[in-house]
Image 1 (cartoon, helix red, strand yellow):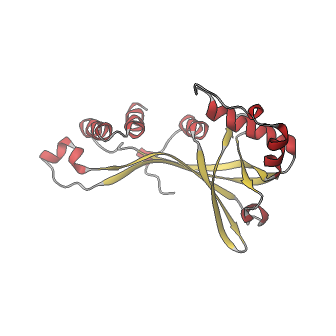
Image 2 (image 1 turned 45 degrees about the vertical axis):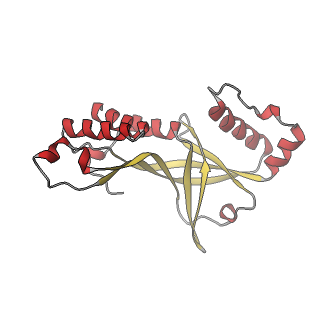
Image 3 (image 1 turned 90 degrees about the horizontal axis):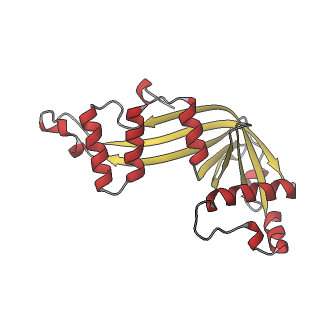
Length: 204
């Protein structure tokens, strides 16, 4: 990934992105070509792994992986209009761009079929996303036989992370005044996550 020095991020920011993310794209190279699936992941910071699952009917897990697997994790992204830059009043040499937060996570993929592993993973994934909701759903709210059947329909996977290429492109190359213009423009359009990301990048 092309990453200018002003878009580079530290390990803490990367781990925060992985911990807060909901779903990502799993991409594997196989003898039949590239395969990709979007799926939710859980990041285990202690073991530095990503855990997820695929439907058993999904052919991707059945195809041997050539080399490393890739998971593309994304944060907020947004179109940035030049009209948001106060400097445009005196300098018209500017063009639109796109702000984004992304990380290419590479690693070795391991599959899991053990029902206990799968249940623990599904509980962790569910509890994480249900946390803070007024009426939280639990795996225990469903009949055990039904859950057992659902678990038989999936295959677990774990990505042992070997390297990460990350880029947070958040108007870091702009002046403080223009960055504030970007924040104001994003907030006017209701994109508060992207606005907050620009503010956080300016403080780091």
